Structures are given as C-alpha cells and as structure tokens.
Length: 300
Image (cartoon, rainbow, N blue to C red; front, side, top):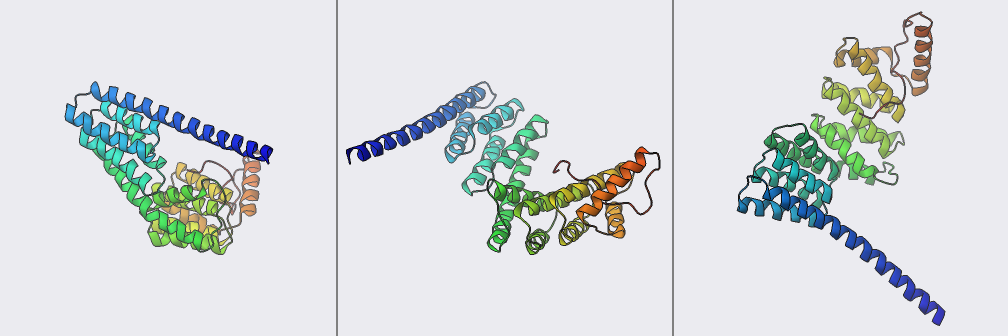
C-alpha cells in the first residue's frame, strides 16, 4: 500500500511539473510577444490612446489562444506598413473571432501576414480576412454535417483542413450546395474527408484559373463519381495547367476532358506513360491519348 501511494504521489508530482512547465513556457512566450508589441507601438506614430487600444486587443487575442508569434507579427508588420489603430484592431478581431468560434485560425492570420508582407493596402487585407472568417463559419457546419452523415474522418487535422478547403471553395463563388454535393458524392463512393478536401481544392483551383464555378464543380463531381483518387485529382490539375500553357482556356480544357471521357486513375497513368515514351522517341502525342495528366503534384 505504501509503495502504491508513493507511486501515485510521484505520478501526481510529475503531472503537476509537466503542466507547470507548459504553462510557464506559454506565459513566457506570450510575455515576450507582449513586450515586442509594446515596443513596436511605442515607436509608431499612433497616439497613446490608440497604442493602448491596440495593446489591449492584442492581449485579448493572446488570452483567447491566438498564437503569440502571429499576434506579434501582425502588429509589428501593420505598424511598419502605417496601418491605423482601427485597422490593426480589425486584424486582431478576425483572428480572435475565429479562435473563439472554434474555427481554424491559421488561414486567417496567414492571410493577414502575407498581405502585409506583399504591401497590400491594410483596409483591403482587413476586409479579406473578415470575408475569410465568414466563409469559415459557413464551411464548418457543412463539413460537420457530412462527417455526422458518415463521411470517413481520419486522425490529425483532417477536419480543419476540410473546413479550410470548403471556405476556399466558397470564396471562389462555388455554392454551398455544390460543396455539400461533392461531399455527398465522396461519401457515396466510400471516400474519406481527405478525398473531399482534395476535390474541393481541385475545384477551387479550376475556378481560380478561369473556369466557371458550375463547370469546375461538375468536372470534379464527375471525377469523384468515377472513383478518382487524390492523386488523380492532382493529375486533373496538371492536365488543365498544361492545356492552359498551350493557350487553351480553362473552360475549354474542361470540355476537352469531358469529351475524351472521364477515365479511372490507372487509365490516365497508362496514357501519361505512353505519351511520355512517344515524346521521348520523337513520335509526338498519339491521337486519342488526351488523358487527365500525370499523378502527384502539389495540392494547389
């Protein structure tokens, strides 16, 4: 009994020390960011009252759990870009809203930071980040509904990645009903949340390349219905990109793919290998071998 009690006491002490170390480290990181933010504000052209307002908003974001590095980077870059106090507060409010509502905060802070790095006018960045938060709000119940309905969810960050992909699709004017429809198509094929994410990214890429949202969603939905894998989706992206480099519009590239028949992944891979072999031998591309392109490649 004494040995057991001793072990439990040691275990409790170990847990306490681990929690203490984590909270101390988190406090130190937040405290360091607070100092950095304060220093940036003190050297800015903002009035004392404006500095205090931004400092208070930054501390609220930190307390809510917005990553300390992101809060610090946003404030310091915004100050360096000459953003006013109201706009900086809008930046922080966007991240704060996402965090409080359980939405992925990374895409929001990334958009703000990248916009500031590229010299985009601060008011445009603020508007874009607020729109993104709204699209994330719309995307979350769609994804959660699909998961409750049986769409297979793996481990890790798959849910957040799916929410981000759905928000990107919504930003590209793909209707919410079409996003949900793609999820239903994936589910009916016993597909996973990862495949749903890749399908959305593919449709969003097509729309961003000039394809109409209707054509993009139809093309990707047809691919899902025919059992395309994540790698096959990458192949579609590569095919459209190659067609556009040759001067074809995205809409026309979609029509060509539909005309040539939506084939399975192995068929596309075989056609790509044959095309590559013929090109290397100087034979050019054989008629009727316009498959969807090779496999692999970047997600976006």
